[in-house]
Image 1 (tube, rainbow, N blue to C red):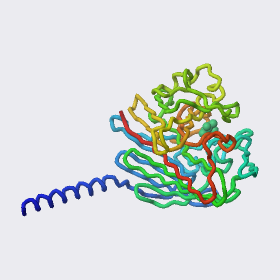
Image 2: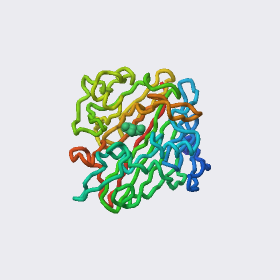
Image 3: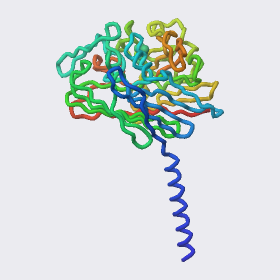
Image 4: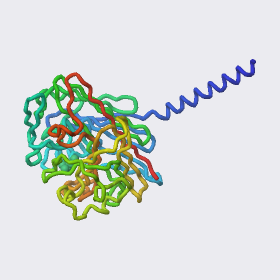
Amino acid sequence: MGNARILRDVIISGLCLALLSMAMEATTKVTSQPFGKMPDGTPVEIFTLGDGAYEARIATYGGVLVSMKTPDRNGKVTDVVLGFDDLAGFVRNFNGTSDAYFGAIIGRYANRIAHGTFALDGRKYSLPLNNGENSLHGGPRGFNNVVWKAKPIANGVELTYLSKDGEAGYPGNLTVTVRYTLTKGDLRIEYSATTDKDTVVNLTNHSYFNLAGDGDILNHQLTLHASRFTPVDAGLIPTGELKSVDSTPFDFRKATAIGARINADDQQLHLGHGYDHNWVLDRKGSDLEEAAELYDPRSGRMLKVLTDQPGIQFYSGNFLDGSIKGKGGKPYALHAGLCLETQHFPDSPNHPDFPSAELKAGAHYHTVTVFSFSTR
Ligand code: GAL
């Protein structure tokens, strides 16, 4: 009896120790430091989330994922997102004519709203235009272009921003919280929001990935769990059709090199200047599901994108033309990086048959996307 009790106690304390060390292992180191000042003097901080070989750095300006370091199959660590070394680089780009939204949180409405207008509860709203005759990524001063409040949380950072009623043309005071957490190779982004008036919301992250860390992404192999996509017009506004990807260059249901068909003679590819479309995810339910997988055969790096959202915009960096000098002064040439933006479909407020992006007064918006890095 006595021996059995001793044995039980030994097993229990062993288990406790194992659990404790697992918990300690799972704790990501979170630190912050000044990243510079906005032109009006507002200070900007940068948070560093480190877990072993993985490290994410997030700025309070635009909630930008400034860098994401991940190991390759031999353990060599490289930054796999595009951007700038300093705050000034982001501020200049986000306020210029070739705004590329590197790494930023996009809102209030990610992607395009046709003619910058939509109707809600019988009222018409007009948004400032910043993309030809359309509104793109929340307009000229979107969530990428403001300084967020921040505090450290377990394994990450919590950012908050109050978008006031009427700001950028949208109705309702919208309180937004974005939590970035890193555990091993999983960068989890959790978006929440509440409003005091009915409004529309579509939040995403606009990171440009290049799993090789340099060159272009044409040899990256992409899988998209989507049987349909939303074809666009010349302004990249969905026509409303949900088109089958069958026998088109848009079929990524099996891993395919991005460069394999990007120059095919296809009207949709011509309109997008490459891939710049929303795919309709084949969802089983409403929880986190794998939407995409990106693999770089050279480095062995892999990125899985999991989300609860209905769509994903795959943008193959078609507007990069070498004129933007990024990290280390490197010019970002055509297809230097690609975006996988989990989202509601573009222009949903004008498409009643698309999943609704409306947020009712008092209701909670909540969505999660995980960028899961590993090697193969
Ligand atoms: C993407 C969008 C592209 C382009 C890019 C920024 O999200 O789909 O058309 O506007 O942002 O350069």
